[in-house]
Image (tube, rainbow, N blue to C red; front, side, top):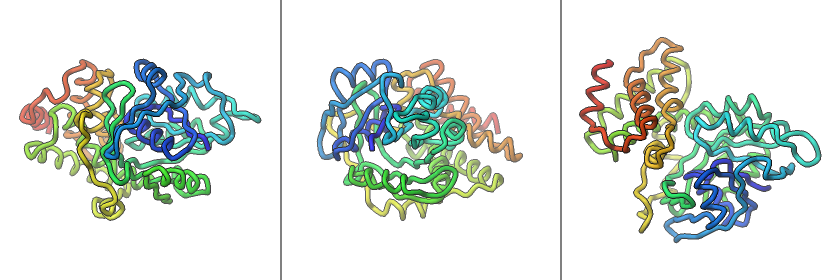
Amino acid sequence: MRYIIVGTGAVGGAIGGRLAEAGHDVVLVARGAQYEALRTHGLRLITPDGPRTHALPVVDRPDALDLTPDDVLVLAVKTQDSVAALDAWSDRPVAGGGTAGERLPLICAQNGVESERLALRRFRRVYGMCVWLPATFVRPGEVSAAGTPLTGILHLGCYPTGTDTTAELIAADLEKSKLLAPVVPDVMRWKYGKLLSNLANAVEAVTGPLTGDAAPLVERALAEGRAVLEAAGIDAVGQEEQSKARGGRMRFEPLDGSPRGAGSSWQSLTRGTGTIEADYLNGEIVLLGRQHGVPAPVNAVLQRTANAFARERREPGSMSVAELTALIDAAC
């Protein structure tokens, strides 16, 4: 199989780089400065076992690549960019007839739970992936991933439920690439569990590295999230089951010379992209809360504040925990 990594940021770069190291065919898809850096200098992947540069094929648009029936699309853009990417790739012809949307498997290797629904409108074969992969992308052409001996743990399954042979084959390739990939029939249950942990991303993005001072805010956001999921009848993997699945298989090591690691939302603000994924993390809890009559004011404030930081290109970590707490208290 050939893996087409649509969105070569932190997650896409780490997965693509590790697959390439294991001898798998990989094509990177990027845009702007990232595309130019990858095309000119290759993908520099920094891990605890050392830095490596991969000179891989890279394209900046779907029509620059001829698709084959053996291709797998890995969607690793932020959810706010999913529709544009899905629309661009779903109608692309595949050698032998048909389109990518009709014939090719598409893996949503993303935070949140919305992209799978968006993808299923356009692709017949959609797979969810719950990504536990600590990686950082703030410099064009460079991705650092601090996990060892495994780079990440990627629960994989058919969307909305089930497993199949394709998932098993993809998992086998990933597991030859320092990426544990358990195939599960309930992948969205794992992704909802990850969603809860991602509610802290907005706190980190606007106030900086999470410390004891931020813990009460994070717990308030989590408590809202758990209450909303319960009201919606949505089962999410809990911390105990997540810890058991990891089972000490991955530890974090500092990486000399690489940028300080932080969550994906913090990285978006650092790169000054103008967008952030808060609408599909904290905003998912707000949406479900409104649908099921459960107030979620903490997550609503976190959503609005993170969006304002991105839109105004404010410096990550430039709001104090006390200021953010006051905004939330005023809304509650």
